[in-house]
Image 1 (cartoon, one colour):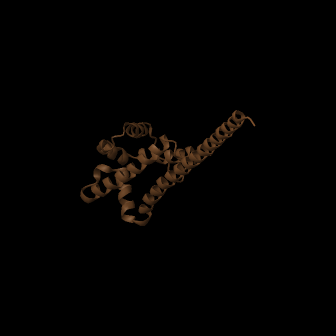
Image 2 (image 1 turned 180 degrees about the vertical axis):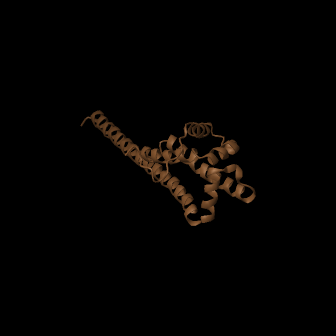
Image 3 (image 1 turned 60 degrees about the vertical axis):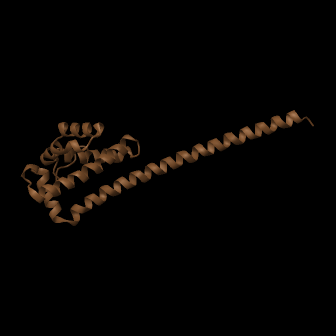
Length: 167
């Protein structure tokens, strides 16, 4: 028996095993990355849902939010502080969603839906006034530019009774 031939066959089998291992590893890494993105997206959406549930559970916060959305400048004292806190949490959550979107961790269809809600929210005069007074809290240039663009191109929000022109 030729030891060189046996050695060559052994090296070939070893190389083939390495290639198969690398293919398996790449598949597992891709699958893990997908699962990580989905978990990040779910976590972000859960925080948005929990945030929205505050309005459902607290009528006084819903009333304050509505007043602030339409006339931020009229809020004083505790109402101003509560609205500031509410908006700060809202915009921090939106900022997280925005960066998840930029990183490709958010389903594009989901992002489009959230972007419509955000666009309509950014059209409200109280939201615009709040952003002008507090945008310096958000140092990410990309996010600040995104919000500024949304507010510059914002159209007045449709009421819930108006049909969607896209349907």
